[in-house]
Length: 444
Length: 129
Image (cartoon, rainbow over all chains, first blue to last red):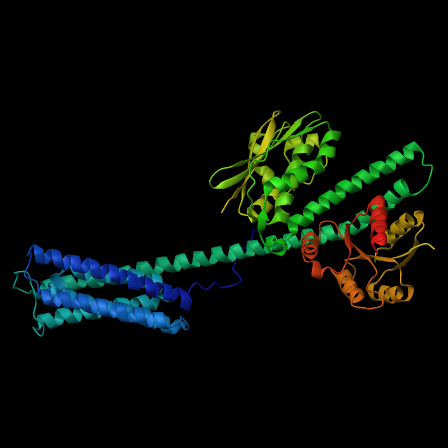
């Protein structure tokens, strides 16, 4: 059956009073920049005496631009964005005022002959980016057309004087051609701009909806993990407790064979409980387990964990080597998570190192990071699988052969915990020689 | 006279395992499978120590029971050992241990309880009380 195309269930609004406010402020910044550009432009014209422009009028426009900008900024600073309509109207007012000033500027630099009337197009782009509805950008286009047409008409009818650069003749056919080109250009640009933006907004909406959907599914998966592990835990704990009582408490004469079978059973329940523990810690939301960070002195915690693992390592005849911990200063971290990280890393290293091997625990420090490096002489991780081992439930092929039982959750839990504390974890490994896992935490 | 220990846990098999373990050290064991009922028996019997499961009807019923005990003049001095589920409540437990005022129990033991650990912990808490 063909899969139905993904339909977002929720409409995402990127068009809010706040988002419009940001655009309003952006327009203000743009206006500061254009005032400076315009002043430089006027100065250059003046210094080189390029044309005989009406300088006082040009300077007047700059002044009006600056005053308007300050007023609108003052107004916005006093009011918090509250209504969509209000913010929309402010955007609209800003563009219209700019258009009027632009029309004046066009007038003083030659009317339809002035290249400045190209700047009308900028606002078409701005309007199609900012506004939500198509017609809004077309209104802006209409305003541009109206203003320029009126200007040209008034100049033609000599209601306004025509500032022409020496050219005195103001030809009707030239005017019609220039205006037609302007109309076509401006409406085509509006159409293209609006259409592209609509498509862009649709895609953006879809991406956000899908992201939300994925996060929801992931959360549900974790809740399911948690539920399942809780449900499985009680019976397996009861089983182990019953076996414990028979083996350790009851004064009985079990046949060696029977004792051996019960021991095997107990071992398997221990493994199962380990798997469930992993599942539970993986399924916990970061927020739920978050504790206040406190001063953690790594050199105090690491030896404790090593001591705990020493007997387990000795059983496998593995040497646990701890290089002298130099870092006496601590840093802010969730202590509980930190201890968990070291415990999990050392336990993993011991687990995948054959009898008679070595596990070395090293720490280091540079200006920005504190490092913990745990190297083993274990089985190593194939190159192509090194990235995968951080994924949930992934177990490298050789790991499966070496240790039949494992959850494939160890490394993904470590990674999750390390990242929760803004750290990073890396692996370097060579098959048959061993692996080095490095965890680093930023000092600040 | 043997010391009297009460177990409140809704898992009858766990109760049995703990009972057998404790009886080998000559404790007298009484039990209840449900919090409020356990509280009534506790008041009547006044055991020397209580073993209390956290998760029964709700995720933290055990804690509510512990609070009620600590707020009841008659029984507030009975030492409480709280049994927590594997891994599940680690965060919770950690916070509780950190804040002494908020800690209505004497000690936590994680499930599955090793018989020797159970006996040692019980002995230790009885001698303190």
